[in-house]
Amino acid sequence: MDLTFYTSIDGRCRRQDYWLRYVLPFVVGSFIAGIIDAVLGLQPVVVSIFSLAALWPFIAVGVRRCHDRDYSGWMLLISLIPVIGWLWALIDLGFIAGTTGSNRFGPDPKSRKR
Image 1: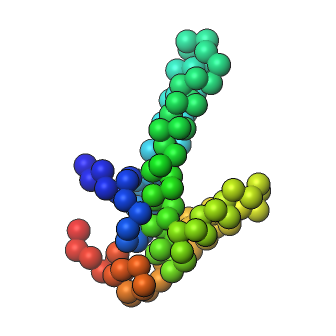
Image 2: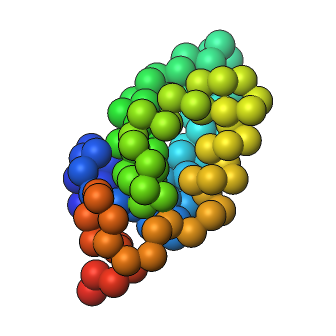
């Protein structure tokens, strides 16, 4: 398992990796944490711990996804704006393809051999 995917802000991240290696595991983990809280009769303790643990990976993967779109990682701060920011993050980072070819943040991740 490549932990630099979740910790490094250098380079670029493809949409496929964004969805399959970050968003899907985060949604599943949040769901499981919610079930654990419900079964144990806790307030959202486990969900809160899980969300806190997922904060840095959210930033790292989001910044690299911004880099793939040829934006500065600071653009991720737009996602802090309620509703509008979340919609921007979902549409721009989740559904729109990255820059074709190399950009100022590195080579096209689609062109690299896996």
